[in-house]
Length: 262
Length: 262
DNA sequence: AATCCATTGTCCATAATGTGGACAATAACC
DNA sequence: GGTTATTGTCCACATTATGGACAATGGATT
Image (cartoon, rainbow over all chains, first blue to last red; front, side, top):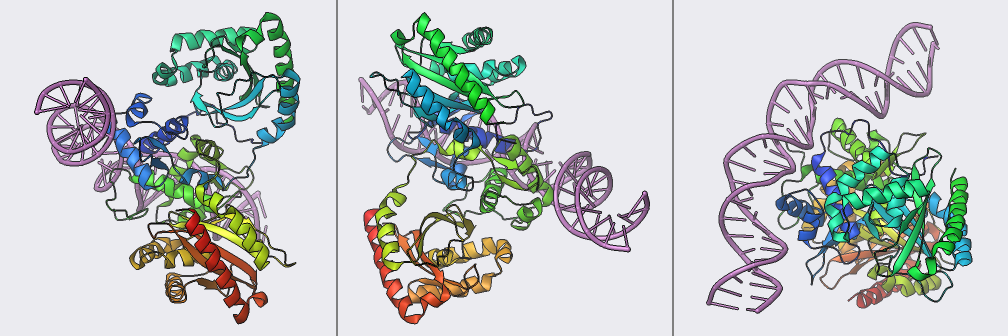
């Protein structure tokens, strides 16, 4: 029953753990830096913490093996110990299992790259990717790619599927991180509103030049958004008419996944 | 107060992070509980922390998604967010890649189950397993199995390959966790001494009744133990003569892996 | 249903922990 | 060699996190 998705409303956030929360937040910021990691400065900027505090926490996490530092660049990145801890869990999540067939079929039918993206905390995380048959494919987003909720069409879709209050809260929390993706809170909020009205998220200006993305959301039985289903293609391939077709296919696929995970 | 708990006594243990260290320590204890997790009581026992402290930290980790609690049993376990963070890293470690072929060949030649086990903090972690061809196989230890350094032959081997001072320190740190595996510090220390003299670790009384294990260690270029290579079989299959044969094979395999990771 | 016992959950006064401003040390330029 | 950008360290101090004590919950047992 619990497919392990992020807890939504914390009625009364526990106290007595400032430092732990901060450390975990830093881990998530680092995770967004992927394999290559991030320099201290950027970690600080993605945060409202002071530099000494970030520095100290990162170095403790290094000593504990959860963070490592690249020899050359001095950038901080997620360390070996994290996948080691992850071995304590079953290798494949229920969502991934449920979406497997549907993703394959849909990407074959549509011909463009499909992405399955989950929410994790205040981020989106790409957990699966299926490449289509059309000769030009948008591959820039890899499995493991993590971005603040709001900067991708998947993120907008997930925020649109959340209660307005919570999406606003997240947009505010992520505000310091938006600059790095050339967007801002106002833009994100209006994109969310648009997506709600439309029933799906669109990004005419993808994170990659000349691409366009469309995302639908997948909800759990409780009504919480569990994931987003995204198609990305070069913009010319997603004109108004084809957009309608593709949206229908995505909505159908999302519905099927929803049924399977219940 | 004292509670000198997580002490990853590196050159200069940083200060100002007690809470973070405790939280990470708890994560590792939970990881040892695998998929099914552990009840609060056992987490406390594996620790020198007070129950309220463990409780508070676990619940914060739950709010943050790094820990989850099983509906039925109320046991605490590693949460979905941990594998999500792990996606930030390349999927296969250099060690695993290097050991792949050698493990396959060796397990075929020997016929019994082979395990590759790494050290992670004060634990051993099984990261690969190859099943042999002989009809009776010891499969009780799965990939992802985590135990305090010292309670398995792999753990003893790794401790034996460490400087005496550090192995003693780890044995002391893990002491509260030994009871759960029916051993104690004295036993572990003498097993380490034996392994050092012999050049490999043996466990006549495996964690599973009637099995026997032999482990050799793999060192990095710096001389630090990187992993252990273990064979497990029903005891009757590892009499004195075969033990010698098997040890030679294991030592050779370990040497080959060492060459590859340099 | 009433009693026990084991385990889990919560409170809060208090000490120890973690904080961040200010300064120091590098590294990266030119 | 100077100048700037980035990273690293220190320490007085307020806040955070601690754990003893008490409360609640959930099985057993009679």
